[in-house]
Length: 252
Length: 370
Image (spheres, one colour):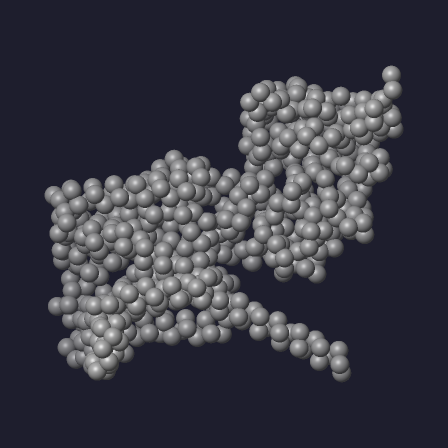
């Protein structure tokens, strides 16, 4: 089976601290892989290495078999790696619609256009409105992103990722801090993505029920190293996860 | 049509629309409504500053880059014209050559400064631009063979623009149709054109990316925008428009020296105007320049009147003495920055927005009741 995305011996060191330690892992299209582990395990750092916010100290990142380790974050975005951030990362004083429209515009590669009026590109606005519908934010399109309640900001974060239409979706705790009744909107979106055979989904999530329900596969990181990888049921039951992730002392 | 000209970026406030119409009409009719050389000089200076401040707003207000080198590019434009005409004589070819060389020099300098230092933190960038600007100013006053040193360069302009050139013997509405008038209208037309071009740029997809970078550079990168390229482009564009503003100033004054176009005082004026007018609005440059330059030029006259009127009151008379005008100008700025932290244009737009919302809510409740 060919991997959509692959990391080989991916490592990053901050001084003496090895945050991600030689992680080799491949991700197959049409599957959702959850990456779990305790706080500080290196999950977000691993994401940063894949989407290009950080450069690896050693090892490689491959997209559709091509080495993209030396590519910048913007280049990786255009190559099809999309990222939603754990800490909400929006354009605070721009409207909800504009936040999404900027993503649509990037995908359309129109950013270098200095001479047309932005609002004359109706198709970009239309597409942004479509995406906002899917996260139930259409009614708030003209509100500044910073004025949204936390749950809506999380939805907008996901909407921006959707608007990029990447091949690889990376969700970093998409439902963190959301109220219980808001979570299903996001989970439905992720479920809908899973039905598309060409999309590869990576999910960092702490809620184990969500992980259990959505995942085709679970990868466990602990102290920056990959310590378990496989079917959800098997991984969750394994002693290493019980100990490393759930903090349960395993009786020998 | 109007929407196309304004790039869909309307004033969005009735008061602002009215103020803008007054400013534009005032500038358009200045030679006829406000006769006299001094009034026309003030109008011309407002025009130049509209272009200069708008170009700075492109950088500071839209992209979020703090630069102190803006007067350097302004000076390059002014010196370009001055030096070229001094060397080549008062011809249009000299003007074109001067503007052309100045634009190339500004382009190269802004590109180098941009690439060298846009990767560093904002504070260091501001310091680097300050250092480069001071070095350039020193250079300009030292190279006296080329620039005329501290004395600057007085030069002749193409005949069409000279006061001795006459379009018609009979005055029109009491104003003689000479080269000075043509010169003013050329400046006015260039101001309108350059402002509209900048308005288009900030409302283009490119301009929208600049605002995204100002808001959250990290996120803009993650969306696929190469922010270094955009910031450098913003730097180069801003420098080019400032250069053109400098060329316009030199052509109008028929003189250029370090104090007219390079001094740090002008840099402070630009900063003040952009803050008073409203950052990231572009219209703020129009409103701010008009208010600032008028205050700068007429506050002393106003104070002379006030001082004479209060000549019997001991302390007040001294406070209102024309020599204290800087004190009052400073006070005016403190008050305006305190009252309008988002600038005049920002404040007017917020007011209009609050009003519209109150209206909409009132309409909604009325509907609910009936």
